[in-house]
Image 1: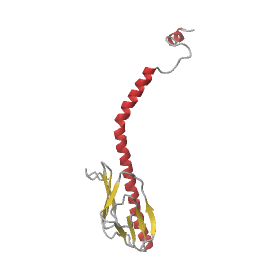
Image 2 (image 1 turned 90 degrees about the vertical axis):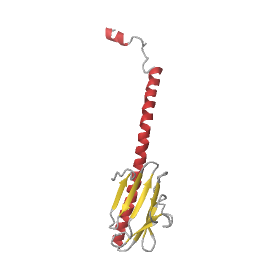
Image 3 (image 1 turned 180 degrees about the vertical axis):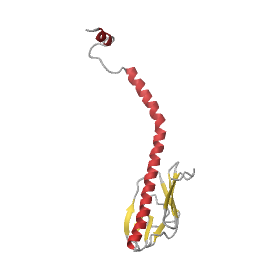
Image 4 (image 1 turned 60 degrees about the vertical axis):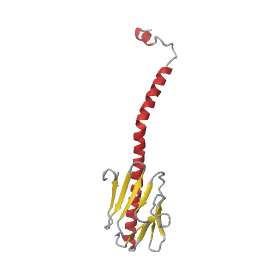
Length: 167
Protein backbone atom coordinates (compact mmCIF):
# COMPACT_ATOMS: atom_id res chain seq x y z
CA UNK A 1 0.00 0.00 0.00
CA UNK A 2 1.41 3.41 -0.93
CA UNK A 3 1.60 6.34 1.44
CA UNK A 4 -1.20 8.20 -0.42
CA UNK A 5 -3.58 5.27 -0.13
CA UNK A 6 -2.82 4.89 3.56
CA UNK A 7 -3.67 8.53 4.25
CA UNK A 8 -6.87 8.37 2.16
CA UNK A 9 -8.15 5.32 3.99
CA UNK A 10 -7.45 6.65 7.49
CA UNK A 11 -10.62 7.05 9.55
CA UNK A 12 -12.72 4.87 7.27
CA UNK A 13 -12.61 1.18 6.96
CA UNK A 14 -12.80 -0.30 3.50
CA UNK A 15 -16.32 -0.54 2.08
CA UNK A 16 -17.60 2.59 3.87
CA UNK A 17 -18.37 5.59 1.71
CA UNK A 18 -21.00 8.32 1.63
CA UNK A 19 -22.25 11.12 3.83
CA UNK A 20 -22.55 11.27 7.57
CA UNK A 21 -25.87 12.12 9.17
CA UNK A 22 -24.54 15.55 10.17
CA UNK A 23 -23.54 16.34 6.57
CA UNK A 24 -26.94 15.24 5.29
CA UNK A 25 -28.84 17.35 7.84
CA UNK A 26 -26.66 20.37 7.08
CA UNK A 27 -27.35 20.03 3.36
CA UNK A 28 -31.10 19.71 4.02
CA UNK A 29 -31.04 22.82 6.24
CA UNK A 30 -29.29 24.85 3.53
CA UNK A 31 -31.77 23.56 0.93
CA UNK A 32 -34.72 24.52 3.16
CA UNK A 33 -33.38 28.04 3.69
CA UNK A 34 -32.75 28.58 -0.03
CA UNK A 35 -36.19 27.27 -0.99
CA UNK A 36 -37.97 29.62 1.45
CA UNK A 37 -36.07 32.52 -0.09
CA UNK A 38 -36.95 31.50 -3.65
CA UNK A 39 -40.59 30.49 -3.10
CA UNK A 40 -42.19 33.99 -3.02
CA UNK A 41 -40.40 34.93 -6.23
CA UNK A 42 -41.52 31.72 -7.90
CA UNK A 43 -45.12 32.33 -6.84
CA UNK A 44 -45.06 35.82 -8.36
CA UNK A 45 -43.50 34.44 -11.52
CA UNK A 46 -46.22 31.80 -11.74
CA UNK A 47 -49.04 34.38 -11.38
CA UNK A 48 -47.39 36.67 -13.93
CA UNK A 49 -47.16 33.76 -16.36
CA UNK A 50 -50.84 32.88 -15.85
CA UNK A 51 -51.86 36.50 -16.42
CA UNK A 52 -49.72 36.70 -19.57
CA UNK A 53 -51.18 33.47 -20.94
CA UNK A 54 -54.74 34.58 -20.25
CA UNK A 55 -54.23 38.01 -21.81
CA UNK A 56 -52.62 36.39 -24.87
CA UNK A 57 -55.62 34.07 -25.19
CA UNK A 58 -58.02 37.00 -25.01
CA UNK A 59 -56.01 39.04 -27.53
CA UNK A 60 -56.09 36.01 -29.84
CA UNK A 61 -59.88 35.83 -29.47
CA UNK A 62 -60.20 39.53 -30.31
CA UNK A 63 -58.01 39.15 -33.40
CA UNK A 64 -59.88 36.02 -34.52
CA UNK A 65 -63.20 37.87 -34.12
CA UNK A 66 -61.97 40.79 -36.20
CA UNK A 67 -60.55 38.48 -38.90
CA UNK A 68 -63.72 36.41 -38.99
CA UNK A 69 -65.85 39.54 -39.48
CA UNK A 70 -63.66 40.66 -42.38
CA UNK A 71 -63.61 37.18 -43.93
CA UNK A 72 -67.40 36.79 -43.75
CA UNK A 73 -68.18 40.41 -44.61
CA UNK A 74 -70.76 40.50 -41.81
CA UNK A 75 -70.77 41.34 -38.15
CA UNK A 76 -69.61 38.89 -35.50
CA UNK A 77 -69.92 39.17 -31.74
CA UNK A 78 -67.40 38.32 -29.05
CA UNK A 79 -69.04 38.05 -25.65
CA UNK A 80 -68.90 36.45 -22.23
CA UNK A 81 -69.82 32.78 -22.08
CA UNK A 82 -72.90 33.37 -19.90
CA UNK A 83 -75.29 34.16 -22.75
CA UNK A 84 -73.68 37.48 -23.71
CA UNK A 85 -75.49 39.10 -20.80
CA UNK A 86 -72.74 39.63 -18.22
CA UNK A 87 -69.56 41.68 -18.00
CA UNK A 88 -67.81 38.84 -16.13
CA UNK A 89 -65.68 37.03 -18.71
CA UNK A 90 -63.91 34.81 -16.12
CA UNK A 91 -65.74 31.66 -17.23
CA UNK A 92 -64.75 32.16 -20.86
CA UNK A 93 -65.92 33.90 -24.00
CA UNK A 94 -67.50 32.92 -27.28
CA UNK A 95 -67.58 34.11 -30.86
CA UNK A 96 -71.01 34.29 -32.52
CA UNK A 97 -71.94 35.02 -36.11
CA UNK A 98 -74.70 37.40 -37.21
CA UNK A 99 -77.34 34.71 -36.65
CA UNK A 100 -76.04 34.04 -33.12
CA UNK A 101 -74.54 30.68 -34.08
CA UNK A 102 -71.48 29.81 -32.03
CA UNK A 103 -68.34 29.84 -34.17
CA UNK A 104 -65.79 29.29 -31.44
CA UNK A 105 -65.41 29.39 -27.68
CA UNK A 106 -62.56 29.86 -25.24
CA UNK A 107 -62.70 28.47 -21.72
CA UNK A 108 -59.52 29.34 -19.88
CA UNK A 109 -58.90 27.49 -16.64
CA UNK A 110 -57.23 30.07 -14.43
CA UNK A 111 -58.63 29.90 -10.90
CA UNK A 112 -58.26 33.02 -8.81
CA UNK A 113 -58.23 35.40 -11.76
CA UNK A 114 -61.04 37.85 -12.50
CA UNK A 115 -61.78 38.96 -16.06
CA UNK A 116 -64.22 41.85 -16.33
CA UNK A 117 -65.21 44.05 -19.25
CA UNK A 118 -67.04 47.35 -19.54
CA UNK A 119 -69.70 45.75 -21.73
CA UNK A 120 -71.09 42.26 -22.11
CA UNK A 121 -70.23 41.98 -25.81
CA UNK A 122 -68.11 43.46 -28.55
CA UNK A 123 -69.48 43.49 -32.11
CA UNK A 124 -67.14 43.74 -35.10
CA UNK A 125 -68.73 44.89 -38.37
CA UNK A 126 -67.99 43.38 -41.77
CA UNK A 127 -65.01 45.72 -42.18
CA UNK A 128 -63.46 44.50 -38.91
CA UNK A 129 -64.21 47.66 -36.95
CA UNK A 130 -65.58 47.30 -33.42
CA UNK A 131 -68.93 48.95 -32.67
CA UNK A 132 -67.37 50.55 -29.59
CA UNK A 133 -64.06 50.73 -27.80
CA UNK A 134 -63.58 48.21 -25.02
CA UNK A 135 -61.43 47.78 -21.92
CA UNK A 136 -61.08 44.37 -20.29
CA UNK A 137 -59.36 43.96 -16.91
CA UNK A 138 -57.57 40.76 -15.89
CA UNK A 139 -56.90 40.81 -12.16
CA UNK A 140 -54.97 38.51 -9.89
CA UNK A 141 -54.39 39.25 -6.24
CA UNK A 142 -51.44 41.55 -6.88
CA UNK A 143 -51.29 42.25 -10.61
CA UNK A 144 -53.66 43.82 -13.14
CA UNK A 145 -53.52 43.71 -16.93
CA UNK A 146 -55.73 45.82 -19.13
CA UNK A 147 -56.63 44.90 -22.69
CA UNK A 148 -57.92 47.86 -24.69
CA UNK A 149 -59.61 47.72 -28.08
CA UNK A 150 -59.74 51.07 -29.87
CA UNK A 151 -62.44 52.14 -32.33
CA UNK A 152 -60.05 51.30 -35.17
CA UNK A 153 -59.73 47.72 -33.88
CA UNK A 154 -56.21 48.08 -32.50
CA UNK A 155 -55.65 45.82 -29.46
CA UNK A 156 -53.27 47.01 -26.75
CA UNK A 157 -52.20 45.22 -23.55
CA UNK A 158 -51.03 47.19 -20.52
CA UNK A 159 -49.38 45.28 -17.72
CA UNK A 160 -49.73 46.29 -14.07
CA UNK A 161 -51.92 49.31 -14.68
CA UNK A 162 -51.54 50.44 -11.07
CA UNK A 163 -47.89 51.31 -11.79
CA UNK A 164 -48.36 52.47 -15.36
CA UNK A 165 -45.97 49.84 -16.76
CA UNK A 166 -47.17 49.45 -20.34
CA UNK A 167 -46.16 46.38 -22.34
